[in-house]
Length: 226
View (cartoon, rainbow, N blue to C red):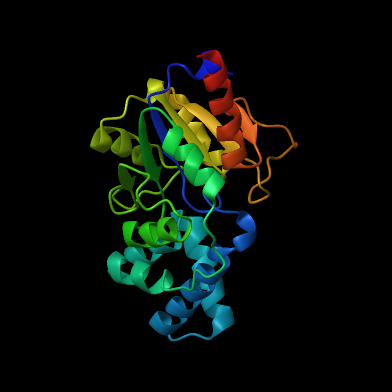
């Protein structure tokens, strides 16, 4: 595997369900807070607020985009509210921490969340000092993955050459724009998203189950080659 990855000088990681197990289900807590936010904002009961939330998601790409378009909300206030969750289900993953520390080159976070939330997550899993930068939803001008403009903004803002970058993500559809730019793509198939026919699409270079395990495997290969 080493020859195929020798060109990689920038390692880009999604955050949620990628750098911690999907079984932690932090998004379930966030999703409930989004529904509660919509209920307060619109003066509707839980069921109606849930329907509004999901309609905004489908029509605008994210609940946030819908709320900004229809209700002109402050995105900072919204994100601070919905991300105000307990994170006691997260634990430090020493294997992952050690593997990321050993990676040669730059290491970045690319997330549809915001930076304050990302930093809380990284602190819980022991990765506070592991990444050079976090490119969040604010930096993407509220155009979330998989919108192509979010990838272009990330590459421009962080001076990333996509042809020498590798992107690790649990949502398969979020890898398609990365591959179109020339990135090496790694899908964390942890059950958070299923592809239609059960086989990985052609825009996925590697399909893995666990980031720490995969990194140790490729780093072992690198060590053995030297």
